Image (tube, rainbow, N blue to C red; front, side):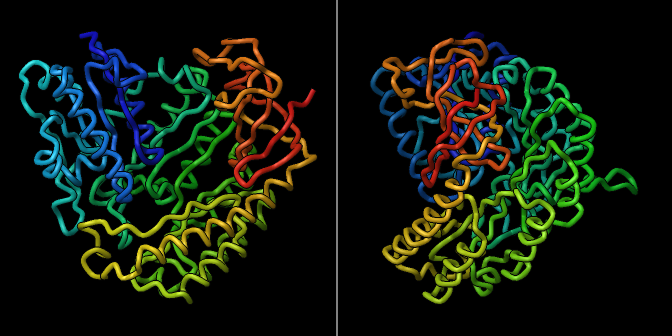
Length: 476
């Protein structure tokens, strides 16, 4: 059809992967993927519902597109996909009549036919699963429907990057009281291990050297075939052993309650599995954790970190924290500050509590912590983590270590008067640029080097540090 499609992505790595898979299936159907909404015939917004701010950004974006369509771009097709499409489908219909397609995460395999119908019939198209309409979560999707999107992946697109995500599970069964994910992505559906391994092999054949296994609670993976169940640790080991072309193997995001020693053992004895764990804790207070329905205690969480450090002294951790959850006291907040100091994350994401309609917390607990208090507590945790991150990054000064070069920074290389633009990945330029890379511990590194190094592994030496970045120089 040769129509131009622009995809705007908000939210987590799962949304990033969904956008890539959608782009691949639309290209296979004859559409062109473009890098600007201004030149697109179709604009798809892949949305996030985890926080109120993310939804506000989408509403604003839809408003701007609506004005453009009204003032001259009459034939523009606007679609909303992702978590807001499931959670806010009715609101989108009422508030944004310019939207012609609404498609939830578990229905993305149907997007090409929805788009075709919207173009040919000029009628509103909707494909949602109904998770958000239920007080509980019940399976409503077949594994075959969900597998279709992943199995149809475009390996031509994968060849433009050295890194790739591979989904191992969709949805979530945890029902943390603050979280909308079970209601927007549905219950857990685990992919067959052989399909995951085959996908990883094809990515390696396309030139990928780093693979990240994805799941909302990735370590809860458990694929049952008859009387045999493949655990996450077994899957991780199989991918490592059966796809030796993967130079770096990662996985996110892990759920602390279900993280077993078998997985730690696999990590410790597998040289190509990155020494990094993202383990959201959400609060340093056991009382808060119970209200959040997290299923772990601070004691069990810290014991997990300690076991991991004993097996892998060089491991890096990242965490998540929520401030201002209903009824959070100064005492609860003090416990969160203390946890940061003890956990010593390389980085931690800190968020103000945002009530999400339909969640248990929204139904049961009044949002009684004033916003000004949330902001103060948010800044306090960020300040503490900034000090910890700076000290962590300074430990790399003087050390030589390997990094995977991910991209070219928007900043110029020192002493370079021209910013090099990379068109494609390898062999794009022989000009000096400021490069952004990542260690096996997920630390961000910036250094000056040839732009053609993007997508390759190199050795650098740390020379300086900020809370967010290790500054380095390329080793001779």
